Image (cartoon, rainbow, N blue to C red; front, side):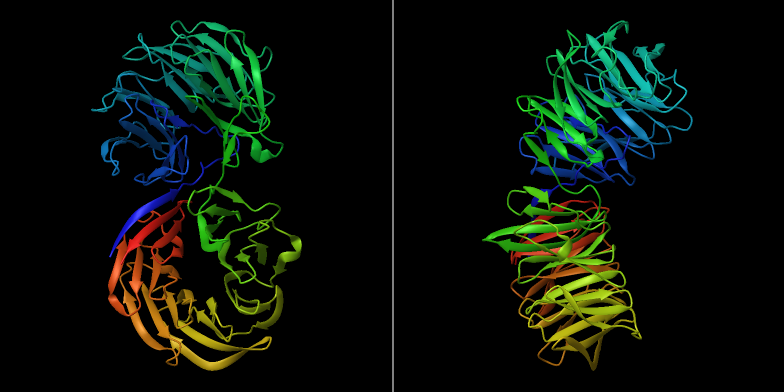
Length: 606
């Protein structure tokens, strides 16, 4: 049994209101870089469905930048660690790791020979450092600021110059190496968010929360003027990026626009209007070859169109928060993946191309715990907002009429033929028929954790925190306790019937999966051992002979029902993140997701 990674559908950048997001670009112009949680995401700029994820930082990563050589990436995290790693091999071997200061790293810059690195941020004893990439020894001092430094850049032509921008409203200018503070500029009246040299080194600009962008001479640091006269933007400016020929630049602002500037005349040539919602604030941008990219507060990545500034060429969507639930459904022969995240956001993905979007309208307002597609082609979802929703996968639009308010928070849903849905809630088990509550079991003597309704709709199995699985028969619109229960090895975490209804699989906190044979009075078929930590999710293959389980140990196992020893282990499916959802596209393609907010597809060979 073997596996190989087939697709990676990456997370969006992790965004924070009022905080600039630094985008990295590779020197050849093929890829761009950003961070989310503990991950660095590398995406192909022409086809962003091609992605690679680096997950070796133990802490949240804040910024990543390619070396000008293109062979290495330096990434920095909230603890002040810088990791320098190989980009040419799939394994991304670590070359060096440094701790230039203690505290969050906010920006990184390399010298053009890829030999020196500057980093700045929220250090406790200092706000920046500049050092040799291969020894870590200092090549100057970043001084002259009294508060957090937000941004740093190094002139990519000799003589070297280094610039910084800080929350003390100042920019600072350094000469070197070794880099020494020369003077600071006090032109901004609020935080300086971004400083960048032009590629030819003749000029640099600083952008601030005051809506201003100032231009300076790259060699002397002398002020040359301001873009757009009194103000460049109505809101704060979070990021700037120069054109490859150094004649133009783009700027991203909290006023929900990106502007394209002619540097020679200091005039805006184009204003890109991204939207009107607060989530349309622009917090990052990148000019890479012919591509103009910007990032919205929503995490959406916009490819800007110079000839149609009010409509991006394309917008890359996805999840920026951890994914909690997942299912797959075929529509007109094409497989779609549905994913629900921590913030209530639900996305659907074309399993082949990675093209994706979210449902329109107002949906869940909190974590989506579980999802399934019923026979009426509705995505049935339950959420911590105390609702169960039924959303048509063909209309792809939320509606207030397709929402069922629960008495208490639901944690698990399953569906069966005849319009049946079983919702397991805190202290309650609820049977729904055609989107209406028809029966509620409460005052139970156990805490229900998960449920599964037999595909035929005749039986409902409910797993409890006491490690028991109880069977109820569905009689008309009621659930009747059959007085029969089976034992799992510990508190139940998830459960599902095989597609043909022959087996019931149950996962528990004691690291075991137990499979019961339905026709044999639910006798134990096999126990499946292998996980090193709590098992949290499982999914049956359409072949009814295999199923997959995922756990807090970051492992995914694919098991064979008839032979507990015949198993396939996918270690580090989502490195450093536990697996939160599994689904099958066909008997040879498994989909996994996790708290890293990415979705992966694996090709399995048995």
